[in-house]
Amino acid sequence: MEINPVYVRSVTMDTSGLYRVVTGFAHAAPGWVQRAFEIWTEYGLLLFGVLFAAVWWRARGGRRGPRATALALLAPAATAVAYAASEALKHTVEEERPCRAVAGAAASLVRCPPPGDWSFPSNHATVAGAAAVALVAAVRRLAPLVVPLALLMAFSRVFVGVHYPHDVALGLLLGGSVAALLVLALTGPAAKSGSEVRNVPGCRMP
Image (cartoon, rainbow, N blue to C red; front, side, top):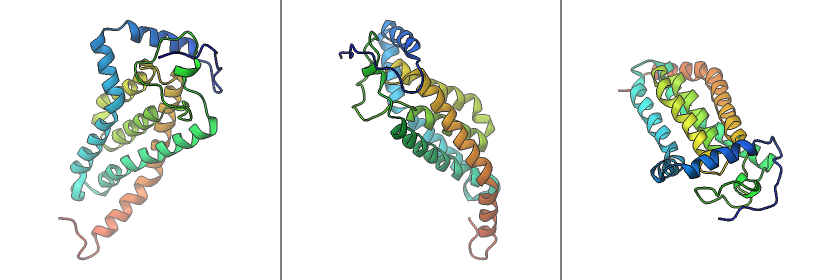
């Protein structure tokens, strides 16, 4: 793929130098490493979906209490809200992808997203950050698993060449912040509502 020889300055911040370093490292990596990152960046978010389902299964029926059930249900909801916030910010900032904007950078390992699919912030990093925070809130023992996975997802977006480093860093921050705020604000009311529903005759969960 050809890189546009005209440098287009980022409208947010300039991390193009670090972008060149990471993409250069990516091109020097063995083929199997490149392929592993390509697969992870494309399908890795599905693993967070599996973890959402596992956390819900663990809390199903309210056997672990209404708070656990509320957290299990809030985790995917908070992640969806974070994604929506990321999309809104993308269409407000309208930053071009580095795979088209940075002159002299190595070609992206995956197809550069089409014009109009903006760069800032990274949706993948936002979703990963939100999912990690929400899952840890629901099951703290998941932290050693989901935090590295979120960081790896964010790094992979730069490694394959479709995002600036600041896109993914601020995406993680956005996603984690939105998820944390929603979990803090809504867990109590959601747990209370769930408890009241279960106490209504005929509405008890098996």
